[in-house]
Image (cartoon, rainbow, N blue to C red):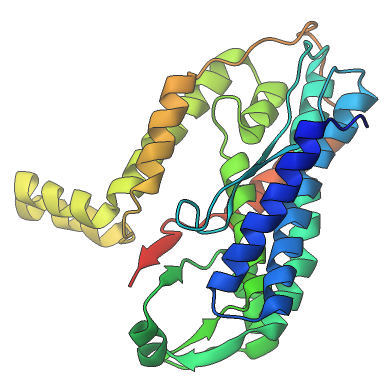
Length: 301
């Protein structure tokens, strides 16, 4: 792996910005360092998964570039990391393996971070937590599972106040969910394209963009509009649809994916069929996406 000066400088700057962000949580130097290490470990693992399989298939691929960001711009001290693929990908098998390796490596790194972080977290009264102000985070299924294992059902009026390491684990789940969105040229889009046809990939991409807009607006507002337009006859539908609070960030992602386009560049040899093992891995990636996704990730109080 050939690292350039820009790789090293960006990484060191990201260490600094994530450390400063960790300090801004009100903790000590150890917890700030722990947050920085945990977050960069997750992000680095994700990108190194892509890098390893890219090199395995002979693709001209760069090591990860980390993107630093001051805490007042990014609540996690970074805009993530990325790699550059400078040559065509030969087959759908190669595309699948390179695409899925990142989220799989990322989730493998996220789970132990999440377990350690949740063990370090504390249960507090919600009124006390709300009085301090800050962020209320949505709870993905995977995080909820580990919370239930270690703390059991949390009493009404209380909440789990995340340790900085647990917050890094939450970010890991969020990043995994974003990358596994089955649309465009995200990792999830690569997986869908490799498993199915171009036509199916375009269809799934467009449906996903529509769903993101719905998640961005929230079903509550949409159901109220439906009731106003259609009257009481719409009530039966209203009762069967879960009420989801909208998160505007999903609308931004829908716009970005629309600008990127629903098309996926072809591989050099499109006729490659994937074996059953990869089809099963594709199903597992869908389950990871569901377990990492939360309709309303962030809410300010």
